[in-house]
Amino acid sequence: MDREPLPRLDTAPELAARLQAYCRLARGEVWEDSLRGHRVGVLDAASWPEVERLVGGRRARLIVSDPPYNLAVGGRSSGRLFRTELSDYLEFSRAWVENALRVLDANSHLYVWLGADQNRHFQPLPDFMLLMRAYPELRSRSFLSLRNQRGYGTQANWMSVRQELLCYAKGAPPFHVVYTGIPKILRGYYKTVAGRRTENLERSRSETLRPGNIWVDIQQVFYRMEENVPGAYAQKPLAAFERILRSSSEEGSLVVDFFAHSGTALIAAERLGRICYTFDIDPLFAELTIRRLERFRKEGKTGFQTANPFPELLPPG
Image (cartoon, rainbow, N blue to C red; front, side):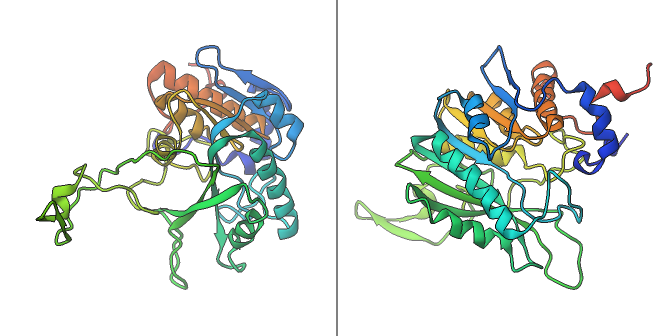
């Protein structure tokens, strides 16, 4: 099979209803990993009592979240990847951001993936950015873009090939320098050091470039990649999450993701020695997240590629 065995689960209600029987968590419940202490819940990001049930008083060095973008994802809207009135979306955003602030450590980072609908005055990106000005404890640090190599095929407008990532800091968290795999080839920038004129590559600490705020070196997830999770949609690349974790957290620290979806934050934390608490309001995506971790530990695979995450659906034999 060279195609995904499951359709997008948030837009397949009949299949989603069948799969509920295989979900180990119901609304309000939390699964705790006995090996590393990760937690996965079926919780509402906008409800502080439910968020508190997950974190239990612990504070996170890093929160990285990929909330719904308030646009019809892939041309289709659903109860999980929805489009609603902008005012309602901003109220939802305000609620989960304030819950995130209560979870963040005194010195910590908050990263938020967000979209901009170019057919609706680029909402909700600028509206969310303005909303964040209401929280003086958060300092804007960077406005990053991840290149989406698939984009949208269009001959009537510029092709959309970017997804936005906002970075905020609370207090004065450390930032750890990371590098891409892109070799340094630019020459011609000189500086006098200790009386000697040196070229920039002579002063380099690495043969490769540090990432800027435009990430062009990370492949967008699609069905031929090992990390692909069938049934999920708009899955973020594992390499992007790992770059964030390496730069903005330390080994053994707590990383929280308010919107688990395909479980990428959990896999990144597992691979890099962090503890991850994550949750989703939909039991199906919480189950996918747990199964992805179990598959990684059993087989060393970061996703399912074109395998069915729910083999219970397969015919016997």
